[in-house]
Length: 350
Ligand code: KG4
Ligand code: ZN
View 1 (tube, rainbow, N blue to C red):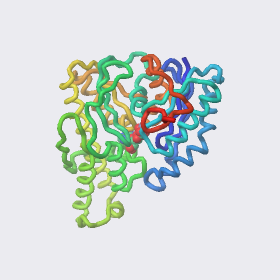
View 2 (cartoon, rainbow, N blue to C red):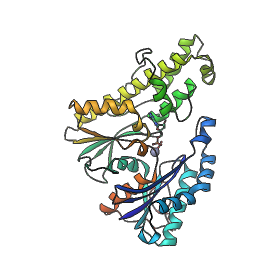
View 3 (cartoon, helix red, strand yellow):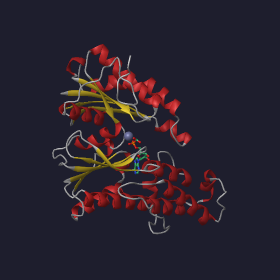
View 4 (cartoon, rainbow, N blue to C red):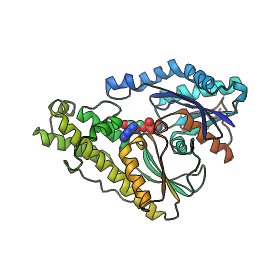
């Protein structure tokens, strides 16, 4: 079964053709990072307009690279939520129109589910159920319990910021470019992880909090520079040396990963029956996180751990197609393309 997956939830316009939920026939991603690096973050209106410009060329390229004609496409899948409203609208309107034009079943897929299913792409050995999925992206930080395909229970979530958002905000304080995750990871390579002691949030159960960590970095930078807390955060970067930036990046990254590690270990003790841990979302590209989680699995402290291929950690259409494939296997019915609404996953009542 060949599925065309479309993803436009944030600042990537993406389309892919995936066969049987795992074989990637094409995966086209046009990123708007260059535009938003200049602003230090995503501007929703600009993102939506950029999606509009490249959406159809991206879909056409995905079909061309997959060498698939419309006749060979069995279904269309699209991210319907969560994400930036204007961005989601471009993807869903495109998918609805294509589904009507080409008479294809349409599946509206939740973005976090897609991130989880990036872990089934291009794999020979699949994660075993039941499993815990740690979803770490720019907008979410959650632990999901998955007893089987297409069944999710949120067992932990952030009370405030997402971990990716925290990477992005700390990067901004340090004067590193957007997106902050890769920039922090790179700066951290030459930094001292022990240089600045940053606190762990006190959050019950499997929940998270990252806004305090961001503020803790801000205060530590102000203290290091001997500047008052009233000093504007956007100006601090002008006083930091490269060594200080590297040390802050390393200390912050270490703390963020420690928090995630603590929670996944707590998750595994709470659900001792889990047979695998899958990590998903943009932050799952982080090499240190991969190293530490793989080490824990090797030491038998957590079950087998899975990460998507680094290029599939961020937003892409292949994961959307993979998630839709498992929805179809689970018996989920297609959406009515004339009625599909975004937010929430129901049709608009007439
Ligand atoms: O999943 P994603 O592409 O978009 C959302 O659904 O939010 O995640 C984007 C997030 C950004 O916050 C970005 O800074 C972070 O993933 N990220 C990373 C790395 N690469 C991307 N965070 C830490 N280390 C990385 N290597
Ligand atoms: Zn995402």
